[in-house]
Length: 605
Image (cartoon, rainbow, N blue to C red; front, side, top):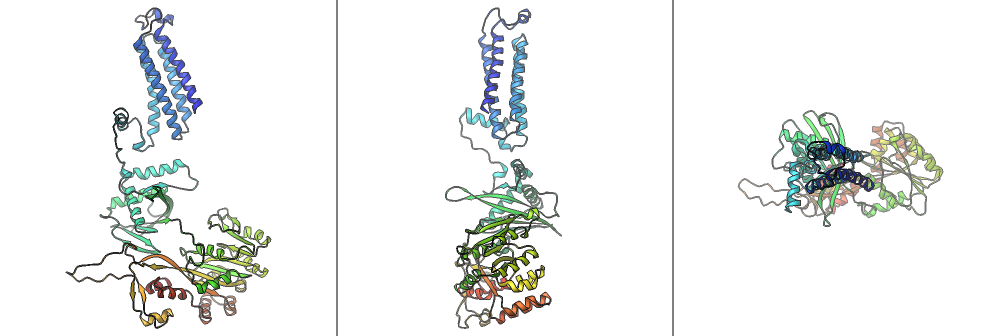
């Protein structure tokens, strides 16, 4: 850049020297012969003409330097073109002015050769810029004059998209160029003077302030409804805005949000999705907090629904204590995870912490006396675990665990974790490897332990191989924690104690606070809880269904019966063997006041 700029200055200086020579000497024969020559006889310097030429040259030099630096700062790929255009134009203008015998006729040519390229660059530069970033406009020149010349302290006027909520948004996308992302954000901000953009920001800020992890927006024909997901449960929100959105405002929000993620704003029926980033609030160090979010849209019979999911950085839980396993169950889990051979299946429904359970299971295993290996999809990465050999496949390229399992087993690891074993061939191979004194740990999406076995059979996994290899299924659910600030103590109903399997002499349980009814004319003394935002719950804790497979269950799994009959028989066999599933942990948490009986009913129904 510096070398290019020096070349411009040198050539421009040569052109200026030519003008200067023409302005102060006889120079050319044709000029002397012309009537009204702008030169006197001999070497006579005109101070006014010289001053004008100096102003023109240094003005061209300053503007050319600014264009060069500005184009580089903006990453303009045409920077060399703008430099060349300024140089050639000025040199040509200087030559034309030199051959015009009348100074005051040639001078405008040189000035135009300087000004026109600058105007062309400014027009091209301002085309895709926000109003605040444009130059040489009336507002920009007035601001420059007041601040640079008059030395006034002027507070810039806030742009439309800067008002309202303090949260700021940015477009993001994998493998997308920066210009594409900037264009998305620009179009979203500029739409209808940022009305939809600002309302969307305000809704997101309100959601974050109220601890929401997801936001559902239902655009109906008559009104727009909002729901926030708190601790896994959606709650209708009526006070997100002082005034309900009008039909026009709702349309602006929908269009602005779609423009931000690169979706088609005119398509109100198809499923569309994308990502964006939020910068919100500030911590004590003054650094903005960032959070990525996904947006999914889908048409409904009466309009359209948006689902925004915040991708918070989850707290890393590494031990059985941290995920809430009771001391009584920890011993059994450690025994299963550290057994010499067998198939242990980890199960949970979507959004119920299966990744965390998998990480904790391997952290619990003894990884220092045995060789461990793990297989996972690069498109669905998990947390890295120490002292484990990682083997990956790429589902985007059509690969499956079978593409790497052969090499993994050839190296003879004692324990293999196969996350998301998506093919029946992989399940069959892993079940067979159990016979080689190998422990296999894998995952399955299911609501409970028996449901995980039924799901595997339904997917086509060989029933005899599954029955012979499986030693246990550990399933997990998340229940909401009662807010310790506002929970209420109640005297338990004997039937509830019986259903939970608790001691009939238990004197108290807990529930979320119930707002008392106020009779007409009476004063309402109820004060909402600031800790949980009056939801009654704050955070979640895990409960577990630990199903140990015995000989009776193996016979049921391998039998030639329909899946519904197997499901019923397996549950009966589990109860017969004294395994009570999630209820063991649920009853303990209810008796300790961690959760409520009503919450257990909601989760376990």
